[in-house]
Length: 260
Image (cartoon, rainbow, N blue to C red; front, top):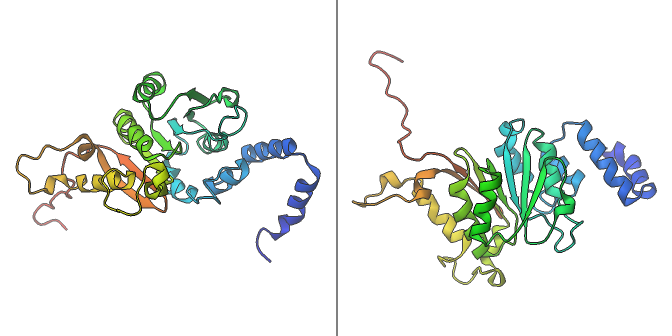
């Protein structure tokens, strides 16, 4: 018998006897009683970051040491399309996972009815550089930024180029659903996997900058990304980028003569 089989009668009762509103209320109560992991919280709140995409396992590895810190977190995209009362599942998930943090979001549609304590939502486009800078001026600098917005290649690149320089040193920037880099309808390209205009090729090019100090290019001037990206992690349809100072070599100190 699986470890969750004993819960089947309880889950069946909940599904068959409680209304959708009652089930949502029960989810919130349970989420606040137990220190659930991120996968479970995604399931409780109905976020597709687990089950649909399985991102939460990776997020937990990168975020778990930050969980109880007081952070500013920005997620691009609320979900629910134009319905002002629909969406926000992952915002509530982040709010519960990071109990000391403030959760911000932006969406092209008005999602203000979904705001609650520690969740604030701005209306605007992730492709609007002036709007993004205004959000950072008002609510930033952010410790974590998660792009789960339109996934259109040009939007992804505008958001990253604008927001990454404005986030805190030591911050983490995540880009979800990078499969759109291969979809022509989103500005991607599957026919030419070296197309420099796609989001994945832009991101892959940044990996060279991790080693810019070793370039045999006299006179090379490192870019902002060369100097401030210290780690990059690639997963299925997900990229996680760590910000820091990539200015000094990180060689281990030499041992003094006679030491061991």
